[in-house]
Length: 53
Image (cartoon, rainbow, N blue to C red):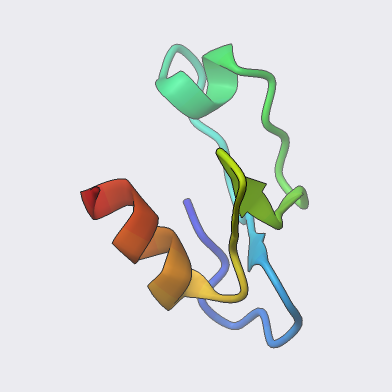
């Protein structure tokens, strides 16, 4: 679950659900996603765009 109030670079993770892809990958609440497959993630909009591809 993204932290929609985060104002810095990247996408801050607010919560991780067990037995879902994020939890299985080892993500933790408070992590900040800054890159996915070589594509920089500056904000939630960049995150949503890369997920749609």
